Amino acid sequence: MLQGTGSDVGKSLVVAGLCRAYRNRGLTVRPFKPQNMSNNAAVTADGGEIGRAQALQARACGVAPTVHMNPVLLKPQSEIGSQVVVQGRVMGNARAREYQSWKPRLMQAVLDSFARLRAEADLVLVEGAGSAAEVNLRPNDIANMGFARAAGVPVALVGDIDRGGVFAQIVGTRAVLDPDDAALVAGFMVNKFRGDPALFADGMAMIEERTGWPALGLIPYFGDAGRLPAEDAVALETRRRPADAPVTAAVLKLPRISNFDDLDPLKNEPGLRLLMLGRGEAIPADADVVILPGSKATIADLAALRAEGWDIDLRAHVRRGGRVLGLCGGYQMLGRRIADPHGMEGPAGAVDGLGLLDVETTLTSVKRLEAVAGASVAEDAPFAGYEMHIGVTCGPDAARPVLRFADGRPDGASTADGRVRGCYVHGLFGDDRQRAVWLRWMGAAASGYAYEADVEATLDALAAHLEAHLDLQRLLTLAR
Image (cartoon, rainbow, N blue to C red):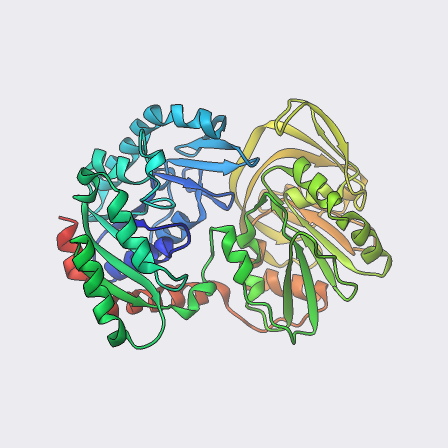
């Protein structure tokens, strides 16, 4: 099990790289994360949803993702509450304090899923959540040491030297851990190192001396990490934004943005400047297209959009001849009205949408989770993606659908002039031919960039990177 000294220290990436490296050695490998918190989810082959990182790790293993790879997924809907997904299905909503009392019941599902994976694999690589040192959450913990103790899994601790304070990260973790938890730690890794590794040899020795844990490796910074789908919204702050691209796409970074990996295939297109707009930033007048991404809480994020004044900016953008694309929750916002008769996102009721598309949405109690494929209506360009939403959208502009599924169902809506469009499908830009169509719609030239091949090549490069800097045979021995 790889646990971290904090969030975003690189646990997900290290697990993905190890998954590919051990798979390349001929082992049957499976990824596992007991509890994840993310609104960036993936649809599984067995019809559920898990965190995006585990889907990438499954890909690194060469297998389809299943709900058992991430049995508990928390999808934040507010600052203090989340939707709780257990083995791929929504169990309910819980505020943070209430959720703590749910954990003993959830541990059984976690151990059940882990046992299933362990039975089918030579090696299961487990990813912890957040920090191993969150000792205030240690009672009933199912994500880090609580799981490791219950499952009898040895732990490798990952620290991040790039953010600074790596001595305090690792030595401090050792200081606050319960002695029985600390005994499970088989060693530590220092991730994201820059410079000459020989200059940090004394540092590794000092950490060994202070903690009593052996050093398992110093991992240099992997510069191509941004070419892989990211799960944590922290990654949105550091995405590559070519300043010299001829076409600008402004993305509204909503407070509860979800499935933002939809944008990954676009961010490596040299002809497109992907500009992530956060709080306090206006939509620039020179933007060619504005993208409203997915949202875990459409009505709340629509209110946040208005509070930023982006609704005014959007109307001005459209008057100037700009284009607008709404994806899933963003599509719902573009309509005239969003009704929530069952109180799926809060108190039952309805709100006015942005009115840029002549459609209305009714949020339903049934969540659609399904892998889909088809083609764009106008250009007949193929796509493969997934649906993950509650709600049904209909109206005059839906008579001009954007996509058509392989079974003949239409999806999406468009204004008569085609400058405002929306659809429910996630992963739309992953198909190179479909992405080329959208780039032309935005006014950008497609580069010939092969997204899926790039992800595979990057996973292989990451595996080779870890092979060069970690003793994989030693880690395998530690895993018993």
